[in-house]
Image (cartoon, rainbow, N blue to C red; front, side, top):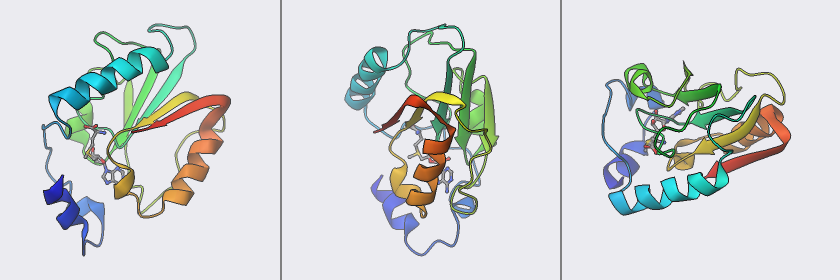
Length: 145
Ligand SMILES: C[S@@+](CC[C@H](N)C(=O)[O-])C[C@H]1O[C@@H](n2cnc3c(N)ncnc32)[C@H](O)[C@@H]1O
């Protein structure tokens, strides 16, 4: 993370930061266990009819509980090779949210939005959060860790 933090300084866009896939974990094993445990309590039960989830700033792993499934789990991130390998995603979108903070989804599309260790990458966080509110169901849940 420290390496990334220094890289963030002076960049003109995150496209420069994510040209090649990085199949690493960005948090340690203990944090992953705590996050997955939290998700097992906070996310809708696996295979609940009609549930749609968006994992923003996603990569090759989302740390959802093992075998977790929903009809629609969309990943958004910067690197297609990473997103392609993420087993929990049913689809993905590659988009630099600093260049375009508009989320390509209809109003009230998602029940849950997750975003892990990545809010600090956002250069227009208020625009992105407004968009998150728009695409979340009224009773939807945003999990930013
Ligand atoms: C530290 S990694 C975290 C990945 C994943 N959430 C996790 O928990 O392992 C940061 C993620 O933010 C995404 N990201 C960084 N800058 C971004 C931007 N400007 N727009 C969209 N996604 C971005 C990258 O694709 C990368 O997957």
